Length: 94
Image 1 (cartoon, rainbow, N blue to C red):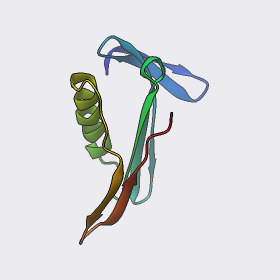
Image 2 (tube, rainbow, N blue to C red):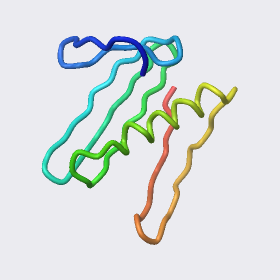
Image 3 (spheres, helix red, strand yellow):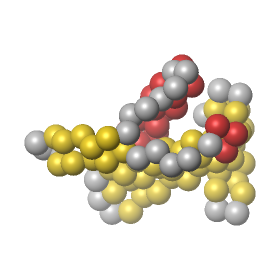
């Protein structure tokens, strides 16, 4: 996110690559989260991490957003399986 961020009804508002971005981080003992919405593009990202006050969710969302903006059409839907982390499902809703 670039420029000055403001606060709006519990959400932070800013800009990401020229588009309005609405985001909210969250931290609690043992966990870190970040949600980013880009209404104009009808896209959102949500990252959960089981680590105290981690900057990783922000870095991961930045990479995902960069990939999204640099890709004409993104289709990452499916179920992904990792022996250490288990299953991850990615869904697209229109």
